[in-house]
Image 1 (tube, rainbow, N blue to C red):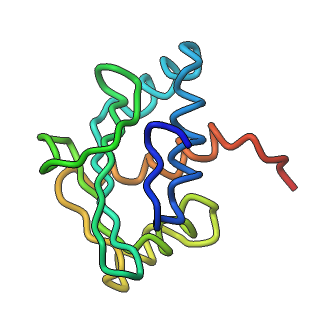
Image 2 (image 1 turned 120 degrees about the vertical axis):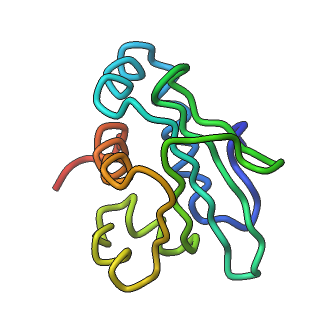
Image 3 (image 1 turned 180 degrees about the vertical axis):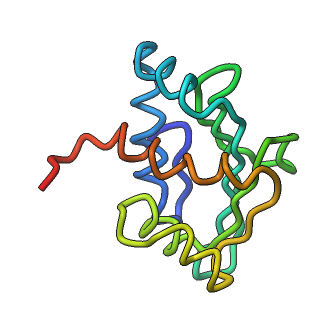
Length: 128
């Protein structure tokens, strides 16, 4: 179990994949050039438990689990664990989730759009 995984969250393996990918300094610096933002991802699982992660693609190029209240960020994404998994896997569209009220965004809307790109970049699974 990596430093960012949390029991009961289906998004854990995806955040772990991101965590591993960001250990590669070249990939991290590329992601930082593209995104230039601190993104807080707050998810709620089906048991109603809430957890936040901080994706720092502005200063450090890392993703960390945040157990206290999330730090100041450029954008915060708030959604259900299951919807986040669909979004990260490319099975849901961020814009549609937002329009249907399933994704709440606090902060810079343009920075929020960049999260899909980041997951595509770090996904080790073969592209079909």
